[in-house]
Every structure is written in C-alpha cells, then in structure tokens.
Length: 314
Ligand SMILES: Nc1nc2c(ncn2[C@@H]2O[C@H](COP(=O)(O)OP(=O)(O)OP(=O)(O)O)[C@@H](O)[C@H]2O)c(=O)[nH]1
Ligand SMILES: [Mg+2]
Image 1: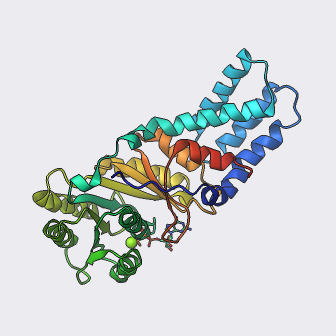
Image 2 (image 1 turned 135 degrees about the vertical axis):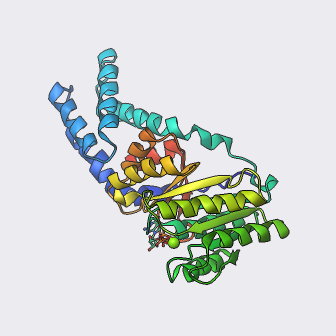
Image 3 (image 1 turned 120 degrees about the vertical axis):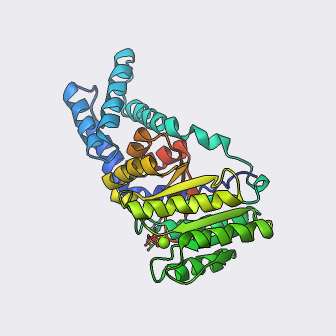
C-alpha cells in the first residue's frame, strides 16, 4: 500500500480561486484580443508573473520559454500562449516532485515513522489529524505522539484530532521532555505492531538552537528503537505566508533532514503561486497540500492537477 492518494479537483479549484484571479485572470485580460504579441505585452505578462508569488527567476524563465516558442510557431492565440505558460509551470513543479513516484510500501516498516516540523501555527497538528484519518482510511493502523509539550493546549488539540481520526495517541503532561513522548509512542507502536507513527512537535524557528537541538534529540531517541527512522520528516508551511514560506523551507532544510513538504492553507489565499517558487528553489517534493480546516481537506500533490486547478475556469 502506498501513501494514500486523495485528490478532489473541485475543492482544489475552488480553493485556488484567489490565486487564479491574481495570475490567470490577469494574464488572460492582457493577452485576449491581441492578434499578435508585441514585446510590451510580453513584458506585461512577465510583470504579472513576477508579482504573483511564483518568484522572479521562475517568472523570467517562463516568459523566455514563451518567447522561444512564439518564434518557432505562428500560432499566437491566447489558448496557445496559456498552454505554453501552463506547460512551463508544470515543469517547475515536476522538477522537485519526481520522488513522489517512489513512495515506499508503508506497512513493511511497522512502524513507518513521520516527524512533523514547522513554525508556530503552520498547520502541523491539523495536518497530522488529516494524515491520520487518511492513513486509517487506507487500512493502516496509526498512533500519534504529542511531542509538543511546550504549549498548554497542544495535547488537547492533538487529542481532538486523534479522536476524530479514530487513532491512538500518546501524551504526557506539559513540560515533559518531548523526546520521551516520542520514545513512548514508538515503543507502543512496536509493541502493538502499528503501521504508522506520527510525532507532532512544537512550533519552532530554525535559528533557535535549543529548539533545533530538541528536534535532533527526538530523532536520536527514535533511532535507538528503529533503524533509519524517522522514515519521513515533513516540513509544514503555511502557503498564506508567501515569501516567508520560501525562506522557512530554505532555512529548515539546512538544519533538519527534511524529506518532504506539506503546504497548508491554500484555500482562500491569493498566494498559491508560492508553491512554484518553493518548488523551484527546493529539491524536496511537496507531499500534500491543505485546502481547508476539515479532516478531508488534505490532498495529494500532483503537478498537472495543481496547475489545471489554477487555470480552470470550470
Ligand atoms: N483554511 C485552512 N486552515 C488551516 C489549514 N491547515 C491548518 N489550518 C488552520 O491553521 C491554524 C493553525 O493550525 P495548527 O494545526 O494548530 O498549527 P500548528 O503548526 O500545529 O501550530 P502550533 O502548534 O501552535 O505551532 C488552525 O486554525 C487550523 O485550523 C488549511 O489547509 N486550510
Ligand atoms: Mg500544533
């Protein structure tokens, strides 16, 4: 069994409507009705892309690709230009997401351990709840560990999600060493032959050395019980924070052994273009995206579907 696949195109398309307004609607307005594309129009397109969170380099690269294509083709229709831009955008996403095709067979690990990290409020705990629900639905047994022992309400929040998802939880009182929670969670998983372990952690900044040391300690403790663990370390990024999410991905990847990204809050934000910028700068795959606060609102990330959803007009 693979990591679950969950794609609800309508939900994705609706969630990305503000991003669509910011990118596609503006592009279309600029192109439409123009019989041929003079240089100024291409500059305008470039300007739209540069200011749409997809990143300066990516914007320039895409317009260069459009220019090359238009030189060799006589078809300068709006449709053809949009098709070219879409293909370039898909290529940006695919560069860092080919790894998604090589996902492991989770149930062979018993336990398959996923560590979840990120800054405050990025959506870590919510994502764990959604992941737990999806793994369970795929027929896997799941246990979650509340290793955010720092924030007062963190335990209860994860407990609510564990109940919703119908999975087990290990928690201890506030102030306990987070690595001891991680240890117990993994120990219980091994004892009870559980398929998937997810460890929730406190929000942290990459430059807070004590917090980063805490993460390293969690990893060391897990590795004592299970070789090569954690199998995955997901960095959760709030897509709504735009440029900041790009910086977080860069900084965290320097100090933690990340294996993938989860980009949350892509519903209702106009900054969905940031996913392209993150992918162009990171060689980490985007594993999942959050498109709402409900348990069903975590989706698998697929380059074509994501670009189609941004460009879809229904
Ligand atoms: N709209 C929307 N809201 C989300 C999504 N993911 C998380 N949230 C909301 O973001 C807020 C923060 O989520 P948490 O899961 O508590 O974030 P966290 O990273 O665990 O936060 P700390 O534990 O404080 O570091 C909550 O109100 C969630 O409902 C998403 O995909 N879409
Ligand atoms: Mg949390």
